[in-house]
Image (cartoon, rainbow, N blue to C red; front, side, top):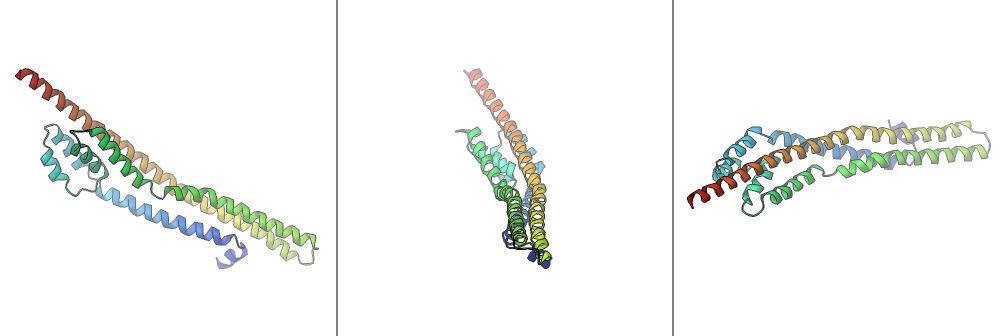
Length: 209
């Protein structure tokens, strides 16, 4: 591996940096999503919606205290601001949750683009070096083949980094999209329940008059 790296020329150093950055982000995002899965409890979400139907806000606060479930946090934000603007409060909370899920994704996207470009750059340098050798004469054919090898190595390294980054990038993107859909689903459900409570309250006031 060390010989392979050395034969790739100077461009292998930025490619190495790209691979380290990519691996670090992938590990960090993997740990993040594992924690998200551990904190996700469907039962709590269902209880929130059930208790909301009876406007038992105190019980909801007690049951959700300290919850790290991203959907619960979004719903609680709406409940706490229900007298002002439940929808906007949940939209703001959802935006914060999605932003956390998208953290460092821009880096992976950049690495997918930059790594192959660096590989092509190394290819160009290797080919230029080979032509320089050919122009000076073919006294040392191994030097010419070394330049071509350098070109192939950097290209392979750049493509390898990009290909191995695409899969986790798409996976994390899919997880974020699924989380956004779940937030929208349960936020809409809570909004419907709250609007129903408001209409029932208006009917009761009208009947009392």
